[in-house]
Image (cartoon, rainbow, N blue to C red; front, side, top):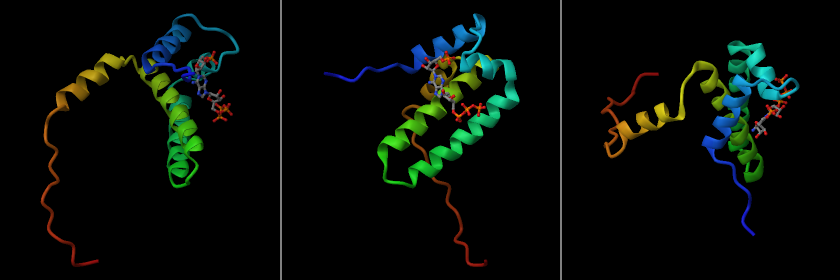
Length: 110
Ligand SMILES: N=c1c2ncn([C@@H]3O[C@H](COP(=O)(O)OP(=O)(O)OP(=O)(O)O)[C@@H](O)[C@H]3O)c2ncn1[C@@H]1O[C@H](COP(=O)(O)O)[C@@H](O)[C@H]1O
């Protein structure tokens, strides 16, 4: 049996629905009602939790934190009126380009 999956697009669309058709008691509705600063606070908290989880060997805990951050980033995108298409277009504009590390002079004074 394969595990059930929810695509990023499906989750984005669900969050967008919560914005246009609020459901009292929904966590997403709560975030939109509180507004940008609350959403940013959650994104900051969840980012920190991802960093902490990444340092530990528990993969399930790390996946959970990445999923939490993904959800909150999507709420932030909807709040700011940014679509997944815009992110995909930005990623496409970088695809196939070689990234180069800048030459840096070595640090010998601390
Ligand atoms: N993916 C998520 C998701 N990930 C995390 N969370 C919520 O994020 C919160 C994070 O927990 P915290 O302990 O950090 O926060 P808290 O103490 O509950 O709340 P704060 O007061 O800190 O804001 C939890 O309440 C989780 O329920 C999510 N809430 C909703 N979704 C998805 O959004 C859909 C719609 O949810 P509702 O808007 O609640 O209907 C759900 O069906 C899910 O698919």
